Length: 189
Image (cartoon, rainbow, N blue to C red; front, side, top):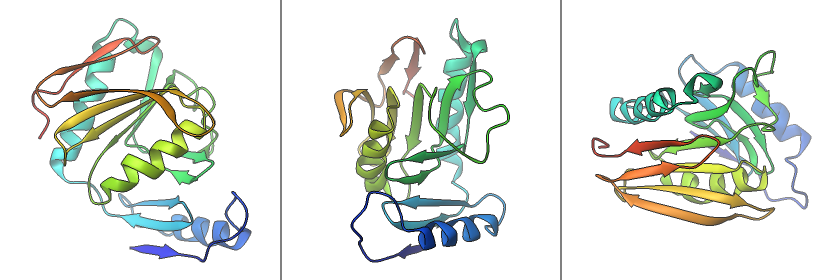
């Protein structure tokens, strides 16, 4: 389900849109995700199994790395970005970052976000990439199932990420420090 309001002149959503978003979010059935993405409210059902298998592989790779125990790998943590309210498939931050945090948190301290493409893949490739960069999140990992590759975006500025590294499924993708792990994409569907 997608709801769109007309364009307006500011970078912030109008108060009535935020109020509507919070109302819908509060009444969304368990397992569904409500997001505000570039002035659109989206409600998506729980993901399919292949999507979850990829998320599990990424989380386990981080956990197996030398510094894995110092991270919180939060699936479905709501983040406030300049482009809306996003829920990444994985949000990686130092342990304790989200302790006491509200459902929709400032992304300060987040080191990496990961999205696995599904129904609205172009949103993950474009709008969310820009929103994460503009929020200053150092690393964005996009697992693009439609194009059979993983892309690591880095070096954000106030517009976009300035560097990207792409690996076709079947290869290994190195995530630099402070995450410092390698993701094996061999079994990504």
